[in-house]
Image (cartoon, rainbow, N blue to C red; front, side, top):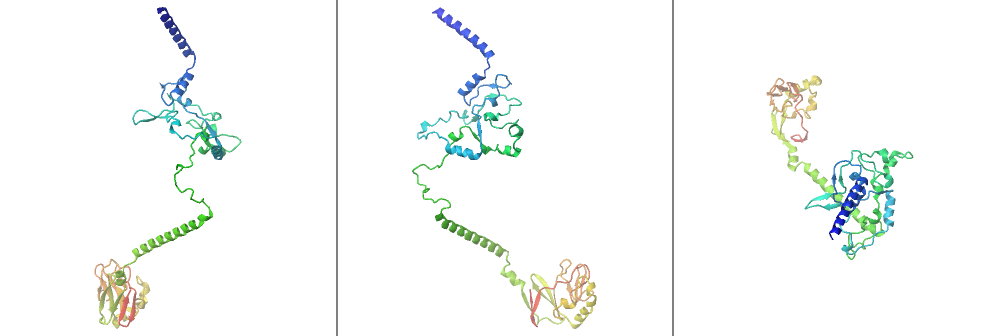
Length: 367
């Protein structure tokens, strides 16, 4: 028995020596590939140096890197005509979720993606081989590497590499194509619906279109009316904008003051001397700061109606004062004549004449 053990031990040592010699002379890539097939999505080693017999991780993918390039219409036809996998009713007949899945949970509450063997990548990785169906992607890929065709324009060749033209090998046979998420036997009224464009659907569509248009128009009209009414002046503002003044209490030569739109209005019943003095200066009216004749300022010769606010800085002038006997603003020295025209001082314009109308000989309406 001791001889048997010794002979077995000698045979084992010889086999190890032979295996070491083989490993030194034969590349290890097939062994790693087999290990990867057994340990899918799990790290095999952590080689961080370039090696002649250990290819980079990008060249040893753990999934198929094969794509079919066709127009999108042909891909749709392949999906329609593909031979589908048999339907499965029992969940236990399905493929297990971890079988061939590159996304594996690792540890607790940690999600790691380990598609490749953890090997250092070369500085200049190889370009994809389109003849083998590899996807045209990568940092070193340029347009002329994969899109150059001397028989067609560059824009036509580039259009062929639109993502919709690429599908992985086996996509038509294995990709799920659900037609509904409602299980059979569940009442969802699909059978009661008429197809789009059916003649019996048109009255309902017309009714919806007219109702929607009517409701939308009503809402727009209501919003527009509310906005206009919001900006509309109130009735008290309108009432304050129109004032009727009784002229019978006004004596000759008197400067009567009324309030109109929160402004003082001078109503003066001019004497014949005032009218004559004002008309006497009509020939020089064109040379005045704001040219205007006496007749243009007064609708009736005996009545001068103007706003009692100085056109310089908004002061209230004093009547029967100034160098011309009309009005005088003591703030900055503006002089007005008996027609309310600026004659001297810094005021730029004549006293403003409001909108007014004589209702009769003794009543005037302002505004």
